[in-house]
Image 1 (cartoon, rainbow, N blue to C red):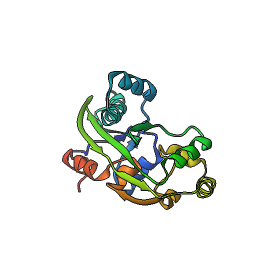
Image 2: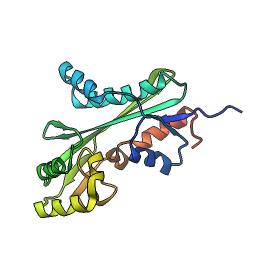
Image 3: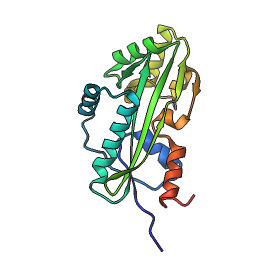
Image 4: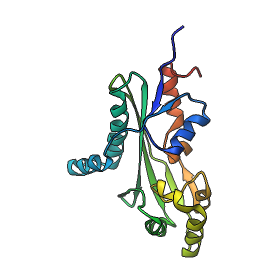
Length: 200
């Protein structure tokens, strides 16, 4: 009987681990040694659009691990786009407040790129662009949210965690829920079935 190929998640993200675990996907975690700032700077110099940049980051993460193993390696990256500009994770709670004050009352996009590598080469790519519409928020509401949610929200590029208290900040979301969280699950599961890594 042929063994199912190993699956490695090339990410330190707790929410990505949770997504795969909830779907009962057997996987290991290996955090890639990738300097995202250098890749972003190179991308800016080359004039890459945000979708191409997100994919380059996802590919770099999975390829760094795939060079060391014959497992199926999943890499993912997410870039927030608001009014045509890209945003990184807020550095501190003051920056998080500024982010929410700026984006409240309007729509933004989360560009979610997923790349999968095997035997040192990319075998699959997926790109999602869910749109999130934040409701109009007062400064008092934002302060109350940040106090209740705490510094965990600094792990989110939008300064919210939609799977937790952050859900209260939104009017509606258009697109894949898992892509909002940072890993487009349904197309990834299809790829894992195709590769014989999961049975169903």
